[in-house]
Length: 522
Image (cartoon, rainbow, N blue to C red; front, side):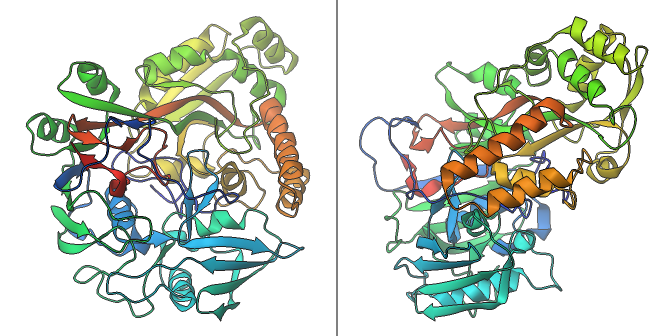
């Protein structure tokens, strides 16, 4: 992902994290899952065997340093070897992992975190010193670790270990969603003396290191003393296959048992045929058009509302996503914690759109829509929306940009562009993309009163009261924001029929996505 804190899950990559790192939400219980929500959850789990999982990779430059994880393959390997203090549940709320519990002071600017009893693969206990070392390593100003931006609210010089398993985090400002920081993309805990990550990586995760050949394969073996229960599998092997067709063919030929990131056409061709299982992870990627609110024609909120009403969202989902998704309602995070689900689903209304454009003096509006083949469905969505806009008298000129520079090009330039984002908490989406000083503010949404509401939410201890502030912010965005969020794409996996326990309620980037310690071979 380019560093836009995740506009999206990259075609070969991972979207997000430092990208966003920012992150997430209140405590729940540690999750896992091989219940009836998991694919093939029939019968008790069986122990043993090696599962081979195919991912798109990053070539010879791949590393097992978890703080450099960027591609999906990197993250899948990192979460097999390492743990974070927290991670995101399916609703993108933070759930305890290595942290057993967390508790803020009354002013929300100091948080006491207690670690659970866990050990690294060499038998040493995970301690507060390891946590502070890991966070200070990530925050090193000389390095470009993904979670650095997420840890920005923490004053690491003032934070300290108050016991072997207790840490007092001192924050730079009140932060109600501090657990999101603990769950940040890439914020893995490594031993205090960790060094040779590619030859002898030692973590506290469910699997321990066996071998690694960058760009080709990584083999990890079950860690018997894992704090969250011994994995069912004996071993997990991550195999690199950059082309989707290669991953699918390997799955069909029995060379692998798990294939990551399939396209909708492949899924339709094999779903229900009995040869392989198709798993759809809903709400994994927001699909949108970005309107720059600081320049014509979108500095007029009537024009923005008109564009909301021009969009035929179902046609966009059917055409650009091949039906593999669901319609959006111009708000990020459908189904996530704090999502304003009470707002009515916006429907197409060309008469109202034409009237708004006339009021704004934009009856024969012409606008350029930037797109690129950088993400699946982008060029298709641009063409579909161009045709939809023509019905309202709007002429859209579709401009196709470079895949290599698209994300940086559209951040500040242009007026209208295609956009997407992977899963992150709604709070993170707001802080990274919608505040006046947000570094990835692609819609140029600059409103001091909106910034003040965010600060109010972050300093509100009561969760219900905080949710009410977020709802108020979302109503504003729904009415006059710059994100035309037309859909949410499925993330699609393929597995052999022998693979059981794959969680189906886990958007990409969440705790139970690519979680192989809960999977088994029947």
